[in-house]
Length: 199
Image 1 (cartoon, rainbow, N blue to C red):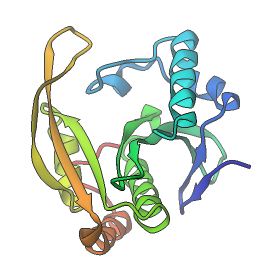
Image 2: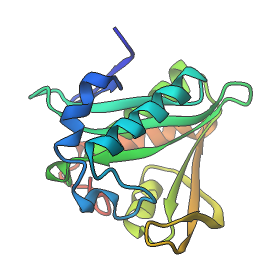
Image 3: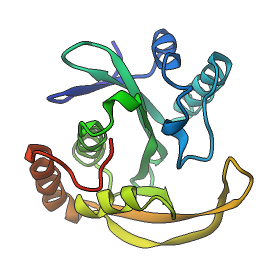
Image 4: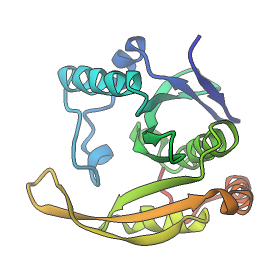
């Protein structure tokens, strides 16, 4: 059995080929990819994405997951730790995408809690970072509300799907900030709603 991080509403389960059909049932929804530089518009795209993720996993650079609803056992999305650097004890959280029917249910927030807990308390990392498109103010507000610190802007960091250059905002949480950030996330999960968080 592969890695599994179990939460209250969701669990993060190590990505395997058996999950691809479930992911393909909603991956073509354009709302998912609004702020991402890629999109998975077909089963072929999903397969290529899977092969790339597993190849990077073998190199120790990526830990890819699917997001599973604990109540229904339905696969509702995917997320990952990537750019894992064991020497410097750092990683990034991203590549998070959800079935749009799950937006507004704090799924992304609980996924971040599970990944951050694993990163700091099991992998003993010193730093976890996040990048978000400069136009994605919703994501930026959500990161600030969980205690992530803004570090700067990567200019012309990526090519958007429309071909235009995109700037990325960089945020991070370091190990000394983790206890307070963990409390903040737990508080947000206990609230009725999370302002600025759409998924």
